[in-house]
Image (cartoon, rainbow over all chains, first blue to last red; front, side):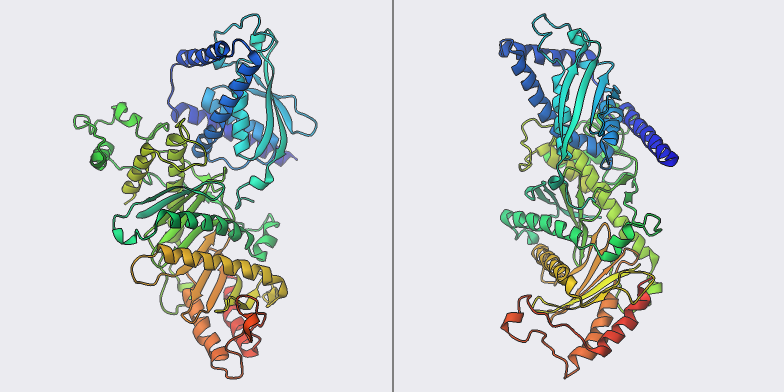
Length: 198
Length: 242
Length: 159
């Protein structure tokens, strides 16, 4: 028991180091304000285009994120060459310590594990997409501002043969206590696993 | 190691990229249809190869303490496919041919000028795409095919994409009867090294793919790659490998 | 364990001999000409056949180009194809790069001696039309052949 715990502790430390090292030395950076404002422009334009039908905006953000995710996973794999994760626990560690660190320089916390260890929540303590944002009154009930993140996660996980449901549970922008995303594994797409891995 | 051709096969076995790098026209007797058939045949042979794993290996796999357990780790081989030393000089001379000129004559040896290095590796900062050893995702599928005239290497990613390199370097096959104990270890080391160089090279092609193909919003997934930037970068890497 | 199995295919796409070793410690282990290996034999034949035809398509010039070895992450296949349509196939590990002289020796000193030069042993293992094209079941059972093959290959198994 003790040795397997030690092993996973050292594995998660090495994930952290990988993530930090790539963020620091291997990726180009842009101005954070430019990033926040670009995303804000997208969301506000979508709200105008859909005439404030926030459900449609949520769906559109999700599908945009999905398209990003299916492509971003290749960048992530080419950069890190990490082996396949054995279970959702390891998957959650790779997502928070490596992926979020490399692309957004944040490390969400993982909590609320389901009893069968196939669903967990990410708590985002800071969210670079919504730095200076305040939602209008009618949006606070319906809009998930950072829904693009859910799409990215779903698309990326699907390309590594994990069919997951990803959705927001709460958002600080809506005057809720914390920003929480829930990821739940539906099934492993066994038929699509590339032949040659064991 | 001279690369003759590069092929990229998507996860359903369709050919999405093919390029010949040797300029002799005598080998261009295959048309694009032939290459499509070739790609799908290789895709299926790749799968068959994983089913032919000998029983002895399957038995030993369950024995965790077996000292002969296969090691799938591939060491990092520095600067495979990267231009050497005075980076900008080589970069210039190789780019002269395709109309992409850089007036870098003033800062050709100025390594502190980051601008000329900015676009060198796309979104990968630094002087090489990656610098650590990595574990191969391709454990039991086809990896290498050696023939008398060429060697073919296959690199498969976790998303099912396959990168194939056909190289004109040939693995030496000793002639004449010899004692097994006398096979020089340099031959084994060099062929192991070949596979490792190929894996390093193909992983870098994967990095270039993740940049110039994945990040092009007008590229549809699983479709043939028609990106000139991708072509250019790959040609540059192949030239550097000579 | 250096050598895993040895196969011979003839020009009618039949597997006329196979020998598989399963335990490193016991060189008498494994199977010889076993029926369970029929599936594997067909897959192996198919794989080598496809790769040979790909190789021929990709070859240039008039020099004959033949497949020498096929590697996966776990094992390596060495092939030796004669002009008479006979294929000798060896599955091994990665310690040695080329077994072509081993296969040449088996062909010239064991197969030719005990099968081809033996007038009482069938030269063509397919008796009639129905056994061509991969449906034949006859195997080499010549004792001298089996003995000299074992004597030659067994010392190499645990290299």
